[in-house]
Amino acid sequence: MTGAFDEFRVLHRPGDPLVLPNAWDFASAASLVRAGFRAIGTTSLGVAAAAGLPDARGETRAETYALARRLSRLDCLVTVDIEGGFSDNPGDVARLAFDLASAGAVGVNIEDGRPDGGLTDVVRQQELIRAMKRRVPHLFVNARTDTYWLRPDDPDLDETVARVRAYRDAGADGVFVPGLAAPDDIRRVVAATDAPLNVLFLAGRLTVPALAELGVGRISTGSLLFRAALGATVAAAQAVARGDDAPPGAPSYADVVALVGD
Image (tube, rainbow, N blue to C red; front, top):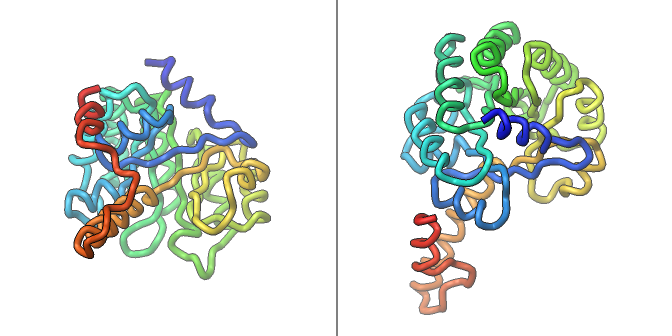
């Protein structure tokens, strides 16, 4: 198992980033693996919405763990979005990290944003990171700060830099700043720490080659694929209702049967 942890770690290459698609169930992950993606993340929005639950409220611990166990059937490296850790207790968060690693996950993504729109105290977040790393030293802990995500109109770059440095000091293996998109801001965060920087792919903004040139080490799709699937579902239903042919691109029934049977 250590080999899988090591393999995942070396995929984070600043300048040649890991493009990490995010799945929400077994079929979406299996489809991505069949398409050639070696590493797959989960999307907390997709997992929560598929279960009829809100995202980022700490209500999907059971669903998240169950999905991680199902994904262990696939020949890929899996990193799991655990929102804020589903607990404020470092021991509980460390136990979850251990359980996920035991189920086959090589990494987790933990965020400091809270449902009320605030941010967790830095020292408290460091405690959660340290607890996970003590319990599962090889687990790739991707520490996300929501300084840009929760404050898109007034992000604080200085606070962002301070938080990613603090999380790295606590043992985080990577740092994640969703919403970070300005080239100069990205350069500053990249230079602020030796941990690979993860950014969220934002449609209409910087491309993968442009982000690579800025030194980014990992690019996540977040909930994009899940939202695209919802859009495609509605578009196909509307086309059928209009009397048109369904839009092309859907796998056949047999394809899906084979996919789940792999």
